[in-house]
Image 1: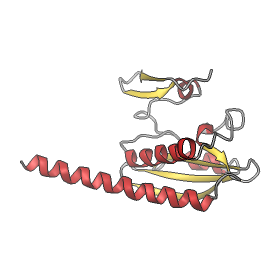
Image 2 (image 1 turned 90 degrees about the vertical axis):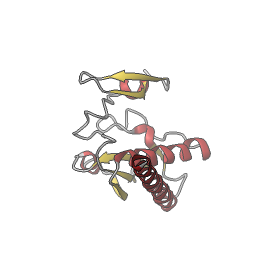
Image 3 (image 1 turned 180 degrees about the horizontal axis):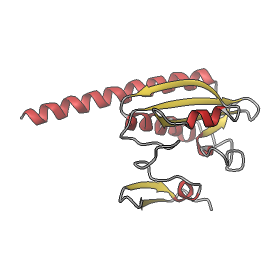
Image 4 (image 1 turned 180 degrees about the vertical axis):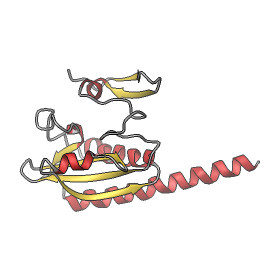
Length: 166
């Protein structure tokens, strides 16, 4: 089943999150409970950019520190082109969303791979054809979006500190 309709979900631990029907159908679970290969925005994490030469694909994604997610991709011939660390996982997720918006909305690039090509790892919606955009441009954009996300976090933390002093 493929649907980009968003819905709110609740896991057995009571966590709530918003996700598309498609993501849930293809195995995406609760981000707060995710530990093995998933993503928890409350923990430090990474934004990664991968390339698969044989499939002609680039992939952006997020993972938490200490997971096996990247190893899963590397075992399937994906190469890590860039790995950007974020002490705040939510910032990593914001960068991933910004890159996907840039690819889809701004550049009009569709997902290159489908669920069949990525059944073991998932993440096909975060792919593009590597012939469509230079990897160096993607890396530059990830770094720029990362700097902006970190600046927003610092600004928000400073504002929270000021508010709590008042």
